[in-house]
Image (cartoon, rainbow, N blue to C red; front, side, top):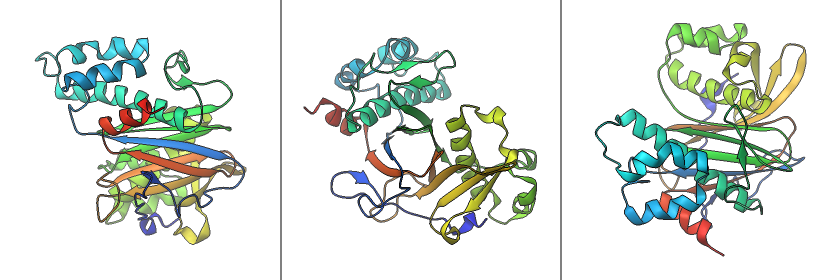
Length: 279
């Protein structure tokens, strides 16, 4: 596995959608609709008019979570970490609405719901969400799907051993180990979200096998005796040139079988709300 070769910057095309050659097949058997929202800190709740535009697209459980922040974004009793968490929560729900609208589905509460474990659910399909600081993403598909978006960060050796399969221990000594581990984590977490296991499912049990010589960003995930437990694509999206301003964020989408991927990127809360309010 040579994740060091995967530095795929995805440009923004004219219709504000990211795709590889405007619809090139990611995998071939089905379709995955993905929406990503990028936003500046505090931007979702400091603008009075924007706050009221957000409300129709937030479910009752989400509104309960963010109500204090909507009333006073700079409330002293809320730490910056807490504010970021609430913003991520609201941004994830906007990404859900955008992905559902792109998929031709009803896209406002209660057209989606939440299970007891807090995961979203929709009728006649599968959905997955992910969020990190200043970014949220949602994927909708006709088959089980998992999505994860992560910023690159540092890993201790103890955490590295929990991420890597025994065959890949050598990577923990690499000079760019944190970058590699961030990518491995993102791909493996997208798989574990697809299966519904989450992190307790065990990243160490998964092995990544490069497809297309390791330079395409496509991966087969192997687990135990399963030769192909899942398929994933990893994208590295940076703010260089005409690419989206993710500043070294990684996005992975995982499905059981091969699928076609279409990614739509919104660079602010205003842009996603404009799309959601269009006829």
